[in-house]
Length: 440
Image (cartoon, rainbow, N blue to C red; front, side, top):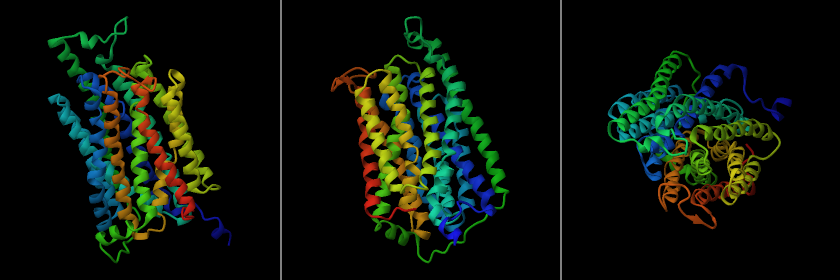
């Protein structure tokens, strides 16, 4: 009777598979946060405007939308392990493509490499999330996913460390003179071309090394025997899709996920531009990104614990309200206090992705594989919303304080976009409580 009232989070027999799959959460966290600073890096090295530079995120997160459904099909037809191996192959291939992209010094080639790399991430996320949910009692599924997702920011912190230590700190195009003016912009001809070549190689190297590491991990996982749940599907993928889109909780979850991911990527991408407007260079701005990720990590563990006592929808709603509050501070408070408010948004974002995921897939059974694909496709919010924010930044020019809106610079007012996204997430948390169907 005791076991029924307090189901275990994970059985010992599934510990090794859980550890292996959880390591993948760190792996795509690494890719996410080594890439976020690249928006600013490519802007300077290749002399792009904000909108052009934001296509880094469009390419990166667009790959999720493209490949999520094919990934679900592969997992449904074959196995979770097959999906993981295919995902790691595409991840490694996209990362290694940074080598020829740097050789050609072609921005579109870099975008293509990121796009293919994200094909692999789409496979990994489409596979790993429902796999973790299935590893035990359904009553502890959301707690289990939150625990696995807690290792995602560990990978993100590592990616940010690599970005700061081996990329941003080594970029010559980011150098300034004693007056704070860019020395790169003052160069002409062969001197500027030499700096561009050197900087693109600096950007290239960590991705190529990452690709080699991922390829080795793929070989290891391919050789490990992993438990597979035999498919119990009695209907086609098309029938599954029809059923899940009749489920209001699931459809709401897809929309909430789309807006949440868009908000997350905007807050983490444009923290550099927000800091730069305060005359903080990229190398120093990374410290604020570190603080945001540490708060995000702490929030994951704290909120995973709180889910034992608080309804998941209610906790989602409260943190959504907190994110709205701090976004308002980011917009209307100028100076370092506004930057601190932006950092604090990350604590509120900590549990949103896995909790939305868990609520949306609750009680879907075999249809969860198809449902997982659409929740991963919703990551496309991270592709187009940063572009919209980049357009706001380009209203008055390529700077961040070209025009004033409501008495604050356009870089501040651009954060109205994540604020609106958090309104959607908050409503989803509230609606899941009112339906009394999110006790997962």
